[in-house]
Length: 354
Image 1 (cartoon, one colour):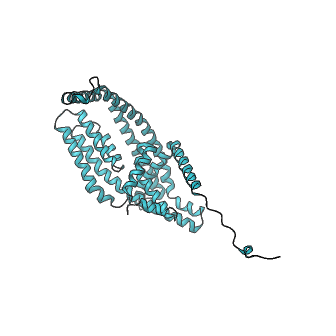
Image 2 (tube, helix red, strand yellow):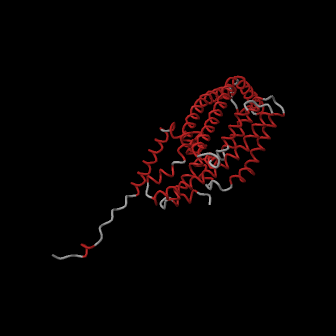
Image 3 (cartoon, one colour):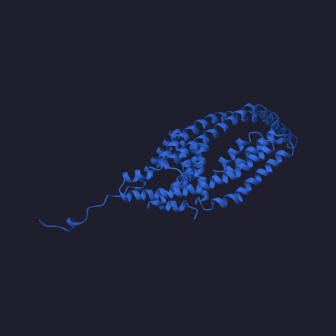
């Protein structure tokens, strides 16, 4: 029997899947992931918020461990954090309910402003508006819809704050056991690689959140004090709104200025006080964006501005405003994880600011 050279050739390698198959698989995975994130929003969103809050509190745990044992330190931090979170959510909810009670008065003033603007436009430029146009009624109707949506959201925010507090309590209690469980579950080399990756994620998230919390407090406290001194109602609510909006790049700064200033002009009588509120709050925003945040944040994020905007659009469309609040930390984690693997490293390099 003759033996040919083909008999000793290496086995044939499996053919690579066609590009169309890969594209279809990626599209299917993306669609399924989107559907799951939408359906599990009531579970995943408070869990991710609790994880981010846990990152903020872990550095304080390291300090308390010098004086207290680890379980006592974590239990103390968890109890204080949950109490503050629920108390703040309750205070915001009460402010929103008070705002809802007084809303008919503000709605009437808003309608009056709209009618005055309509009359002014009709006088100066008659062709711009129809003779039967009722801008005041439309503005009042939109305002009523917005007030109803805000009131419904207040109850949801308080409930979600309680869920976040529950998750946060158990996350802090389990945090110290995570490295030992990883070492027991994996081989030594694999366990160290996972812990090394987790350490990079921890360092990046803690660096960003620690600086962002400080810069948001530096901005929110003067805003609340200015509004309180000028007699603008619900100053605590606007301070909390400013604090939270500061976590949303670009869009948040505009929102944190427009909402309290618009309410100041709506509540206060025409004069110097609403103008002073607008000017002073604008000064706070400019000082924060120009000096405070660059000094505290530096290169803590390391993301391209286009990537930040895309992440805000994605998570905002998926989970609304809470999604926008956690968009940047989630994107930072995704970039660090993708940079760890050879296959996704080019994508991570493209998403980074450098």
